[in-house]
Length: 318
Image 1 (cartoon, rainbow, N blue to C red):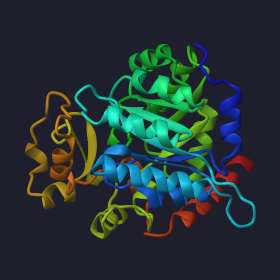
Image 2: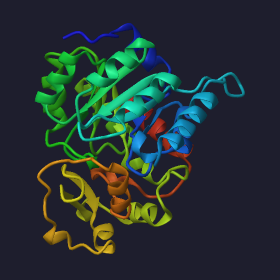
Image 3: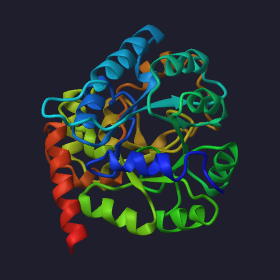
Image 4: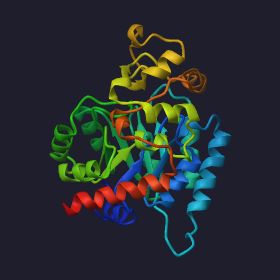
């Protein structure tokens, strides 16, 4: 299946990046500062629209990112493109308003999650943007590809936040049988060697979240960042109790919020009606993926990217 913008627009996108990385849009972690720092460091920055509590705040955030990335940095270096992440679940009540802002500010990429990408396609393709759908199964990948997306973000086993169940080895190979567009791999990638390995599987980019929770520019509170630095995979709890979808959370944050990790009650499915109130209720239960054991310090995003780039180049040379 041939994607709408393949291959020219997708090749042009890759050419703008210093490293084939998307700084994943993370719940209550990604905001304007993280996006701007990412793009200025040569990787794609993204944030979930619900992180802005109101449409007015979202308007301000998108406007700021659009303005500041629209100018060339000193020295003539152009920033990498940015991405807006939209929740496409049928129960999410703000999608129409968020799409109006997408049409106004025209982010180069839009990443849809937790539902069909169809609502975004007409708007984003109308101004020449790229639509990428988050998917965690081959079935969902087929549906998104048939809808006409330009890219698929394959959420594999080990991804933080809403996770997947498939190995990237199997997931990428099967999706490449029917889709020739942009493929992003997410799940447990924490260093430059992992980025290069994902390319060898057939991916174009990787999405890295946990590695950037601890960036100084992230919205994560200091205790969350310290908890990520101290944690390893043994500290992760997989549950659907908080959002209705399987996700990994830090055990210490669950206990700190007053829950027993051993007795969480799974939710049967997602319901994002009144999403902002529910987001506030979840704000102290913190997520991380299986790359958490590779995080060792709180530091500026630019330093994290520089280290990843050195590791990536070393892996390619080897």
